[in-house]
Amino acid sequence: MPDDQSAPPHRYDGVDGPRVAIAHDYLTQRGGAEKVVLSMSKAFPDAPIYTLLYDPDGTYPEFADRDIRVSPLNRVAVFRKHHRAALPVLPFAAGAMFVDADVVVTSSSGWAHGFRTDGAKLVHCHTPAHWLYALDHYLKPDGDRLKRAALKVGSPLLKSWDRRAAMSVDRYLAVSTAIKHRISAAYGIDAGVLPSPIAMKPHTASEPVPELQDWATEGGAPFYLCVSRLMAYKNVDAVVGAFANTDRRLVVVGHGPEAARIERMKTPNVRMLSALTDGQMAWLYQSCRALIAASYEDFGLTPIEAAVSGRPAVVLRWGGFLDTVIEGTTGMFFDRPAADSIADALDRFEACRFDPDTLRAHAERFTEQRYAESLYAAVDELTGTGES
Image 1 (cartoon, rainbow, N blue to C red):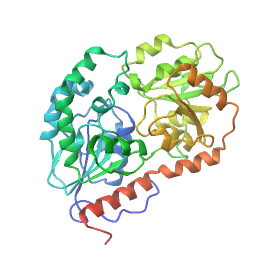
Image 2: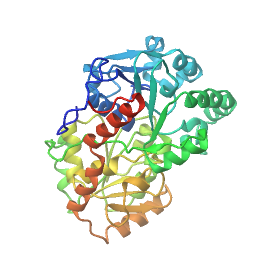
Image 3: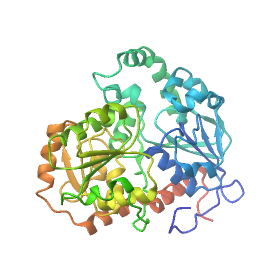
């Protein structure tokens, strides 16, 4: 169970309380959704995790100790490394995936809500599928034309499958107010809101990043930090562009298909890193001046991770960030994912002061303990279990 959490009302193993299983689209990367699955697994330690694809090297190492149950697609090595290549067959694979449980606690942004079960289905939805309902954010307007054309051709059939899958869900919980509205627009379902949790603790032992240790203390002012997968809709290129020809310094942590392009465009005051330990991430958050994010986020986890260390955030005024950042109190917004808009926000940000204690108190709203307690209540309500 999560640290510092009182015992759950049941074991949720089919003997003491309903038998719970966990479902997730695919465990092939290190993102916020995968962190949520780890939190689910802490809340329900006896629950197996069902997923279409599992790449131990590509996702968080903590999954190695879990009971992971995969689809036959996992035998195809290329799909484990490039899950988007499996798109034409994913609806069939998801529809064939059967989860044997009284309640399936599901983390989904496209596929796991379609897994079959004879039990109840509780979905914590990160977003209705971006590639079906927000294509312009998923692929930039100047993005891959072939991929855009293929998605548009296949969209009617995929939407039909997706909406049938949504109708099989007993209860939806959205990660943010923005996603609640998106679920309503896509499916006509009135979802509750359950923010994603943070696993980072204030007492996480920090571990300096060797190649940054001297650089981090140069030049007086602390560096800014951007933590993101390097994908088109994350707009990390705009963040890097905002630092070009300035005295400000930036550290980018992440990897993805945009990495090579961003590496080519960055200036000497920008450093890029990936595959860091929890201790190294804690050191970066504690050492930075602020977090920066220009991405179209469904929840917006990284500002909360920064707030744990008493650091504010400068973020895009969009989506989940509207729930996780309070302007003037825990951070600052900019209106466009463009270098000039970000640079203007940094000018405004540097003229303000932010209280670290207020930031840490804000982060307490998003603890794993609160998240687990909400899941227990939802599972018990679905099964009529209640506390014994």
